[in-house]
Length: 222
Image (cartoon, rainbow, N blue to C red; front, side):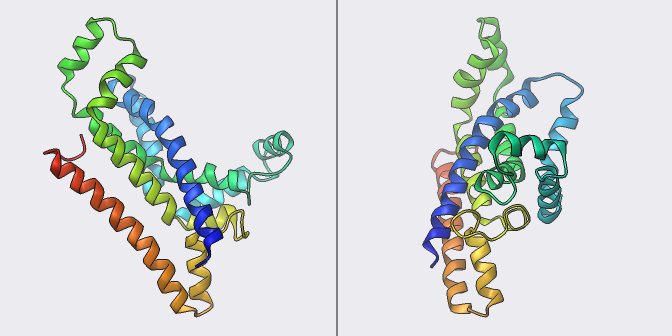
């Protein structure tokens, strides 16, 4: 087991999940409560990583964050190094790639809340922030847990974006999915079995916990 890659994978998934939840909660509230005609386009854009091949997304991000674009050059001059082939670059790619897995459970959870409660809160003077964090989030807490777990697991298992944007730099961008790929490429199937078993166990345990929690509470995720 490559424990350095294991620790880096957990770090990447944790940081990505925290950023995604901070982004997805207000974005989901906007999609559910907002009335703009542009919200459908915004939701479609956020869901694009679901249908876009990971290698395509990774390639576009590699070009965008590289020295050939004004954005890439600006980031390089600001940070002193390019985002491509760095841990920060992996975080950026992971946030974009896993956004639908954080956003969609929250949209479903917020949409399932009785609109009469939302209207009552507005009549009592609740502002947007208070409406979201005092009403929507507590009532959709299982959706929040589902969003966190799905985001974490999706980041742990991602491969195409990591390979295209981060490469295979030990201690910086080498994650467990890259390790597994290298082990199979080198015909080291015994080590590959161990790495794959760890990734499988993480996924099964986390998903089982979500479904078990939903059954105990008498519902699904909302």
